[in-house]
Length: 135
Image (cartoon, helix red, strand yellow):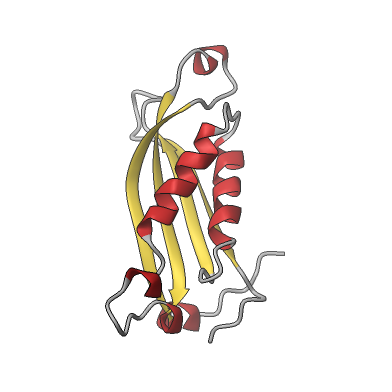
């Protein structure tokens, strides 16, 4: 059963995002996809409670650093070939939710070069840490 998303999450959290981050990824089940890396676009939204993301001293350690998102994507892609976008998106979602300040996250991956008659094919997944209460 999918979790019920409390609308107050969006009022009590700051949304951090990474849009259209591009990387070459070894992904796909077809022989032609295994021959060379493909261009993939990543979109990530992190929902961090305002109490854990509102700086009082204007210091980076008071917020979630955007580098965390990029480094997490890079580390997962560097592990080697992935057959499915669903696997990649799920792995990234778990990693984003493992951050101690992240209450909820959305991850999407897009292959923009698969079909000539559409912009992209992809996967979008959302998850929450229900046990991580809002402060």
